[in-house]
Structures are given as C-alpha cells and as structure tokens.
Amino acid sequence: MSNDQQKDLAERISEPVVPPEVAREIGLLEQQFVRAEVEQMRRSIVELRPLYEKRAKIVAHPEVQSNFWVRVLSNASGDVDQYITPADAAILGSALKNLTVERFEVNEKGEGEPRSIRLTFEFHTGEANPFFENEKLVKELYWRKQVFTTASGKKRTWDGLVSEPVRINWKKDMDVTKGLLDATCDLFEAEKKGGSRRELPEFKKLQEKLAEVEALERDEDDENDDEDPLGHPSGESFFNFFGYRGSDVTAEQSAAATKEEQEKFEKLLKGESVEDDEADEDEDVDDDFEEIEAFPAGSELAVALAEDLWPNALKYYAQSFEEHPDDFDMDDDEDEDEDDEDEEEEDSRPRKKAKV
Image 1 (cartoon, rainbow, N blue to C red):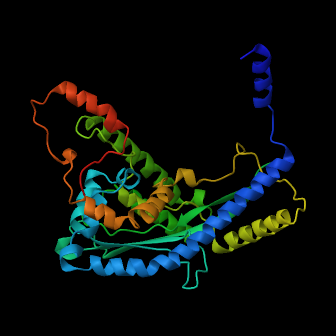
Image 2 (cartoon, rainbow, N blue to C red; image 1 turned 60 degrees about the horizontal axis):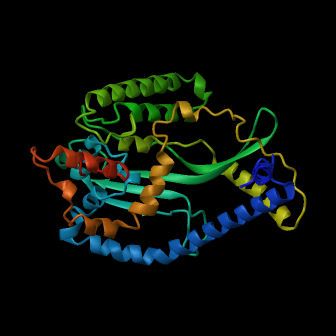
Image 3 (cartoon, one colour; image 1 turned 30 degrees about the vertical axis):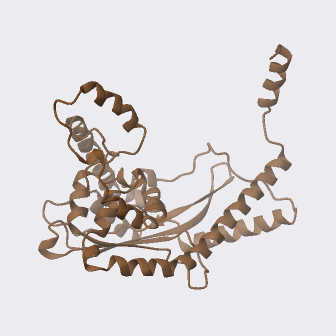
C-alpha cells in the first residue's frame, strides 16, 4: 500500500463522528430489531407451553423424577456451572426435587412482557434436607425500564431484570452465603418501612458483610488454589442469587419510561425530529446498587437458566448418561507432559467443578 493510500485510509477511519442522519437511522433500526425479537419471543412462549407440559409428564415418571434436574444441572453449560460451588453442588445434588421456569407476564393470547422470568425451585423437606427449611424458593424477575436524569440534565435509559430478595431459612451452621443473603433481605425489608437507604443501619451492615465475605472467600481461594483449580467468582454462592435485586424500578416508573420511549419511537417512524437529550455513556448516574448487590451477575444467571438450561433440559439429561473421560481419575503415574498439553485445551472451554 502506498503512502497516499495509507493516509487516505487513516483519514477515513479517524472521522470523528457518525453523521447525525445516519445515527438516527441506525438508532431507529436497532429499536425495530429489538421490538421484532420481543414479539417473536411472545409467539414462541405461547407455542412452546404445550410442549413443556408434555415434558413435565415425562419428568414426572417415577424413575426419572428423582434425579432429572440433578442430572441436568450436572451437565449445565459454563454460563450456569460457573456459579455452582462445591458446597452448592452438595445442596442441589441431595435436596433439589424440581425446577420450573415461567414467562409469567405473558398471557394465553401472547400479550405481556416476555422477558420477565419466574424460577421455582422445589426441595425435599425435613430430614431429607439438612440445609434449610424452605420447600420452595420462588425468584421472580421483572423486566423494567427507567429514565435517569444525569447531573448535566441529560437523560439515560436503563432496562433490565429487577427482583426482590428471597430469604432462605437455613438450618444451624448450614448457610453457604455466610449471612450475606440474610443481610440483603434485612436491608430490603427495612427500606419498605421508609427512609433513605444510605441512612439505614442495615445498609452499613450489608456493606460490612459484603467486605467480610469477600475477604473470607479470598482467603479460602488462596488456600484452595491447588485443590480447586477451576475456581468460582468470589463470594458468589449460587444461593446468593436469591438476593439479587438489580434495581428498585417500580412498575409505575417502568410504564412511564416505556410510554416516553414509545412516543419518541413513533415520532422517528414518521420522520419527525426528536430532541437529542441522551447522556454520554461515560457520564455517571447516581446509583448505589453496586455497593449493596449480593449477586451482581443475577441477570446473566437468570437468563442462562431460562434460555439455556430450561429449553435444553432433555439434552443435558441424556448427556448425563454418557461416559466422559473427565469423569474418571487419572493414574498418578500418567505422563506429566501429556497432562500439560491438555491444560491449554481445557482452559479454552467451560470447565466443570464438583458434580451436582
């Protein structure tokens, strides 16, 4: 390439901004894609419900029901498996009876918000569950939207899954969340009584518990590096997922933000000009949820459970009967060089921890 060609290419790449009219067209088309995908979700939810009912009848077979979901979880993808610690695996492997995923805001006519998710975990009780008292743990996550106003007066739109924390009634010395889930529930209950969140004593207690658990997990990771080379996100027991909140956007706030966005969308469709009042991506919005979130990846895990584990459960169940080389112990006198060669390949794919 000649110097002139290089210079011309560099000038084209370094153009400072997308032309305004093109940016508007891109933004409009992106919204149309999202709306089409959401509508497609609504249709598929209604169409798939009868099939999931048929699957439920298969799972209810006595020889299948006792370990169906345990086998499914034991073969879950890395998007789920990475959050299941060995302690979590012991609980799920012995106490879990059933799992149900519902898109509960979509009615029989296919109307409603398809991105909201309800996860229902059913467990053994009594002596069959030495870990906690709950027979069911129901986690409902609502898809909500909110418009923030930044310090500069610009607007920023946030959308995502929000939820209320679910308390687990742990039996003595069995709390694998190390008190973090209880602290999250305590703060949420205190907030409902009124007052500024930051001024509540439960806010400080939760922050202290987060720091305490993080330090404890860091120490345990250092001690167990050789024993558990796969690791897991620090402090993120699977059961902390029941404390995920995401945000505190109300249904009313979400409806108002959705209406505002719809009005703007309709204007764009008509070719009318719309005031560009969107905040820059790097402009901060005052939000203290990062300081109190017990399970930051809650949205990602919920989506993985709903969009991967749930629809592919039969596949994962069948795979659990297949023999995998990784399930067998290698002899101590195996050639070490061969093990070293395998490490790079294993690092490039999701890896299993303790089987559920």
